[in-house]
Image (cartoon, rainbow, N blue to C red; front, top):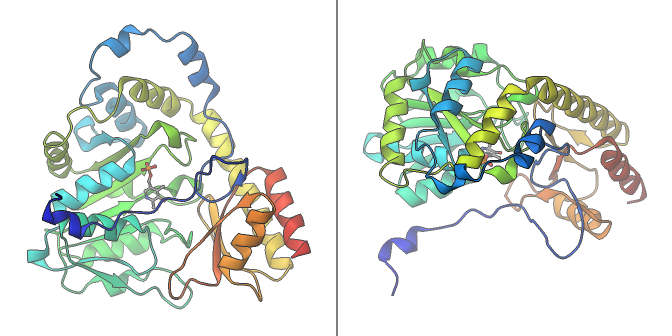
Length: 349
Ligand SMILES: *Cc1c(COP(=O)(O)O)cnc(C)c1O
């Protein structure tokens, strides 16, 4: 009954969103603080006429605001239904196994191999260094392109923009490098400043993490206008209206309220750094994070054991059943109270 191509699918498994009881969710990197209060004012006064009509297929106003914020032009921006959708457009538009394998880090966002299977792109996973950082010197072998998150997930480790620049100088200019900046607001320097200089890079962003709008499903990509217009061609061959009218309005409001978002982002960074020090004091090994989560191992317990004990106590974290990562758990940074509760439970384990 099914098409043969269904055999190639290995769907992504998202973190649990349990509906059975209330957990403290430190497992999917959601923001613990609410979205901008200006969004709530907007929704209360929302004109339903906006929903009667189709949404602007190209999110024109939202793209202008993004362009202004990041100092680029409107034709260097495209929005999508979450950055996952934008990433899938990138895989379709840029990566082609006839020209070599796609390269990405061995331990990285687990959606990348899923898209490769979906679009039948061959890939090679490049090992991390011993300290779990990405070493871009290892990405110069023959390939059809490169993709990596910066900071990387699930490690949280950042690559400096200087190192990325060095890599781009040595990498073929006719192959695309996608930099997935889902977590860049939590402590890294964005590569968006490089897109006019390097016509072969695309930077992807999401409203799900630093903008606290995971449920809205909104993301965007920035890059040279030729690459962005290729992404529009993919979008319009698939779904002309991926971003609904409400999501466009809310995205516009969120981007303008940088005062609020700077404040909650700084708070998360502060809680993260405190929490990491306290874990280290009690014997955990914590990788240096520039994201809104940490990747850490508790002495004497596997990631799965920590996960189970925490779940019994009402806290969800994420562990990875992957060779080489068994010892770790990924813990999203929540409120101060939530992290204190985690530390109290941990002290009893
Ligand atoms: C969360 C995440 C995304 C996806 O973001 P959405 O906009 O919610 O689809 C993309 N890349 C990485 C590395 C992420 O962690």
